[in-house]
Image (cartoon, rainbow, N blue to C red; front, side, top):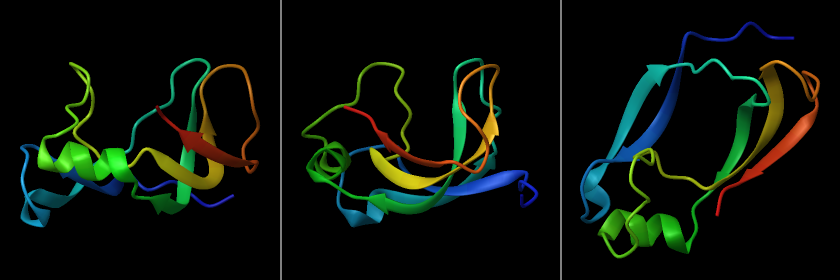
Length: 95
């Protein structure tokens, strides 16, 4: 198993607009809580809701993260208490 980095790279959107509002950022790697897993992402999809969120036509729920990307595929690399195992393949889809 590879060592985990202290940060991860992501794209976030703080305000609606064109492609110029997408910001490439680095943030501290989150620690999964009980019942959660951390996925080392190998592929991420950009779908209609991501684009609509970026242009302001699909506001995220209050308190939602400004990080776009509802769908990812990769491997579990860290676990919260209980549940799955490191190294297993995983997908994430958030409605």
